[in-house]
Length: 134
Image (cartoon, rainbow, N blue to C red; front, side, top):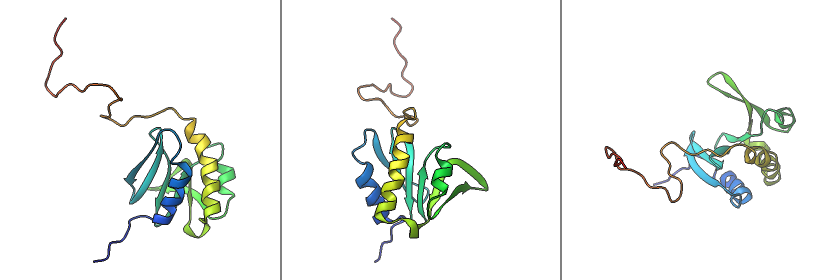
């Protein structure tokens, strides 16, 4: 039995090597690929279709001038501050340059927590339980 990856494993490994040491780094399967997060904010996504990278509105014109880059369009709507990079333009050096552009921007965003996530050290009250009146 042959198992195929839903994303480009080499691209994912390149991104991982570049940002895994960042505080708040996590990964999550999404969009038919894998998403890389910093402090709960998506910084990049790797799939067989290429690289989705968050650069911010201010850096978008600079990013779109790079080889293989185009605006990110989802369901007919352009997502400002996001760029999609086609696979032929994604050698190791290019991926490194994209992460150098994206990390400072995404690191400047407020930290997000996922719905239902607990902060370290917090206690979860069981469903239906009420706090005792003091």
